[in-house]
Image (tube, rainbow, N blue to C red; front, side, top):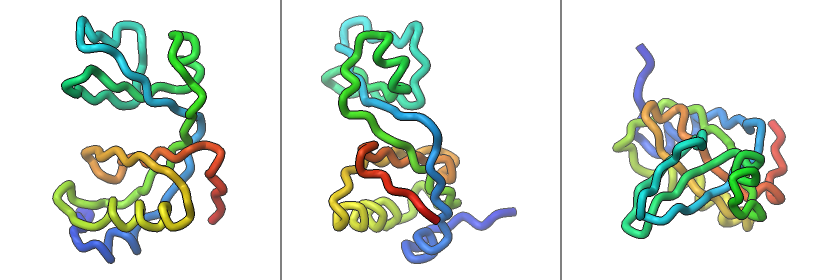
Length: 126
């Protein structure tokens, strides 16, 4: 069985980030009748103001959404606990220091949690 990591330093040192194919955008829908009928979002978040969906850029464009702020996805690939403290802050701090905007999305299992970065700022090498 794989160990679930909670310690900030263990989570950061054990992640093996991978840049995923595609570009994604955040799209907003109003609260009234917010349905995701013919869309295939990789993420959905319900807020008081409405519904936010994360869509593949081409699909968002076809559906009539604004697509100028496209993001690339990096998956951190670390078996972190949802109640682990410091992974998000550690990654966000490094990216902020480099001037790279990011939006983190937590998932369960956490190894599948994506990190979405402005596409024009991604320079990925291993």
